[in-house]
Length: 206
Image (cartoon, rainbow, N blue to C red; front, side, top):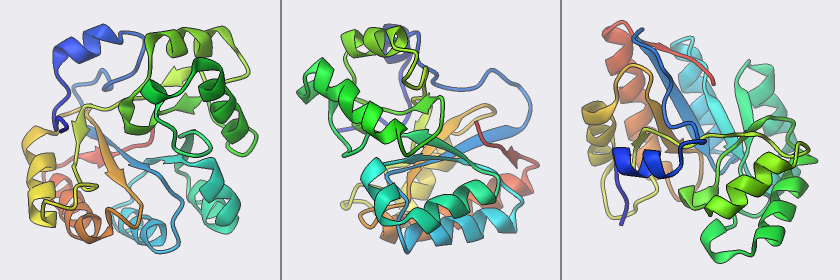
């Protein structure tokens, strides 16, 4: 069970997190979780290049170790990177100290002030401890629109519909450059870029 559009009450419960960007300009903030990946990430970079688009990549530390060249390519192309923990741990199911250790381990590989909790699941106590530790990334980035590309029960077209229906100026949109999302990502991302570009939108990194 997941929500495509982040409800106000959830944003209000975590007010220190960033859910969308405050702008009325035609700008969208695409983000990609769980990479780098040897097939999905190069595809994403190629599609972004076609539209002179910039995006934010929230990387898992163990994947950075496995695919360091791909990680460096993301940075070289002018995109921003963020910490997505070392092993994609669920904050709700992890003790606070272990959770922070996992973030710290990823920080040794990923130089960024951005952090996105895997699954969007993080305790308020963990947020408080992150902000108290200046050695950890201080900007906790959530999202406004979840594409649903990780959901193997829906089609790429359904994923695209999710994004087109709910994305507005300033939206932070989540896709995944991962094996699990690949079948939907390869359909939804190019069409998203084309649709909003034709409507005069720009794509910027956080």
